[in-house]
Length: 112
Length: 115
Image (cartoon, rainbow over all chains, first blue to last red; front, side, top):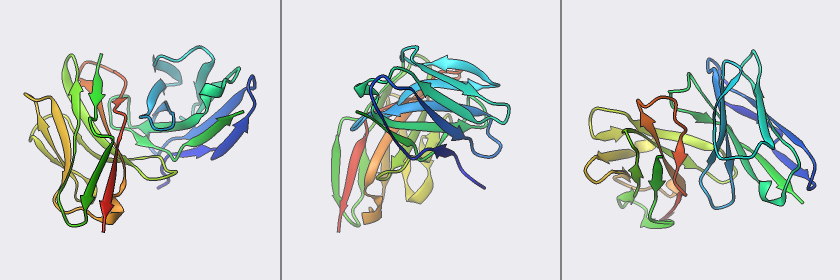
């Protein structure tokens, strides 16, 4: 049984560019949440998708957007990248919005 | 709004000794509490959770956590530490059953187990 998978593993972008990160949830899970983990910090909640809709959103600007597909996989898009967007981006899935979350290995984004 | 505090950035313990990683929380309703562990260049692994019931919760890899409502704490414990337990530990909380509130994490505590 595959756990949560994320792609790519690492990514280097330039300021002002756009990036798309991808996540496939654990089998049987229908809810996907995205987190940003800056160096030396705990994960910060970006948003959560359930039934292909954004259900909750953390304190992140509109440059951060997402999507959930009918197969429950999800994308995180970040526009107009800033140096401060450099972080580990974690995807987590759960059986429903109220259940415990299982995390993927993350995508390390570096903005230069 | 909910919040989590992990007062220690680093905890050092000798192999074979008991370990404790501290966590205190704040929620407006009842807490739904979690511990996760993160190894280098890896995502977070779920260790254990508390919703209701016994104050002592047992989890993966011999870890347990004690819920104390009066002290608003949820400390992670293990009777005998292993070198392989060295990692970054995160406590997290959400309101329960206040609806679909986001999971809020502490800043993490780095555990170092010395042989």
